[in-house]
Length: 253
Image (cartoon, rainbow, N blue to C red; front, side, top):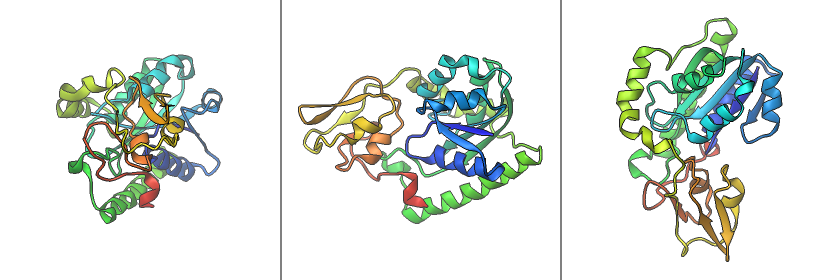
């Protein structure tokens, strides 16, 4: 098995690593930002693909990766893992349908609740111990799913008509438009920004640059919240106006 993931704050990476190594301790795991991922997928029949759901759909960066590398997926057996803070309906099914366009066979799906990555919306933030418990439950669920796949009985979460309806009417109908294009709404507080360059280095879209000692955002934000949750001065926001709590998966392990 080869694992492929996109992750903003580490949730999807952590779950995938756990899943793949439980299935086969020799499994290799790659970010879609790693140039080695393509060759690894090309040479393996069984793929596990993990990503964070946004509004019950697939982030634009992931959809583009799949379509730009459409030759990779033909005849691959893919198990899809969708991580989320609250609810997604058919997260695994959404990515599965994208992959099926290019010849992949979707053999199963898994939905894993993790601490929400949206650090600037108070309603989505929980105490540290609650988030740690969420991760503990996620580990148990992930381990069980890996063993079931090994036994030839893969879980099918998020796949099917009922799951599709739940995802569509639960979120996509109202908010799905927010992921169709990249966002230009990332905000930077110049009074807080110290121009350290961390955001510039970690942005998967190369959407941020340092100009005259301050971070400047362009119009290609994929809403992964990586910069917001790693800024040492909490100078960046997207959906909210202030950072309530910075969330990276290592904080809860």
